[in-house]
Image 1: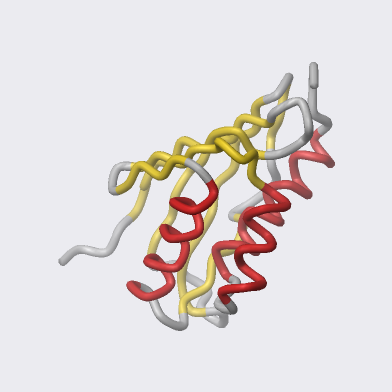
Image 2: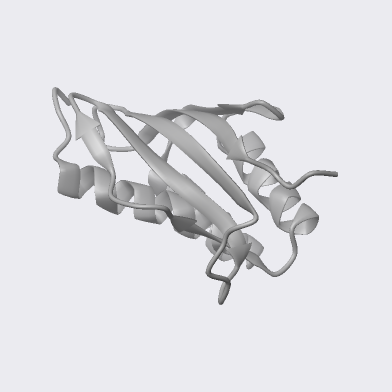
Length: 127
């Protein structure tokens, strides 16, 4: 894939966020399998996950750590070539102010699946 359109990147980012929010293990794994390349990787300051099994386990662990909270896109997805960037938010579904804000860079493979995500945490709750 030489380039991804902003609409394609937006849709892929929406499916990515949906996987983070899916609490049914079978449905979540289906989203991971459909959205991520088999050898895809996810890296943020807290975790490195390589392959679909590790990515799925990371999503499950985050859901356990933050029960009842929901991810949402923080704005439109910006993309060029095979790279997209977007802001996301984590908090209660009905909250105006998120508890956590992050910024992800996503690389898309030739099949239109996520090959890599590099995540950054911009706002985290104080402990």
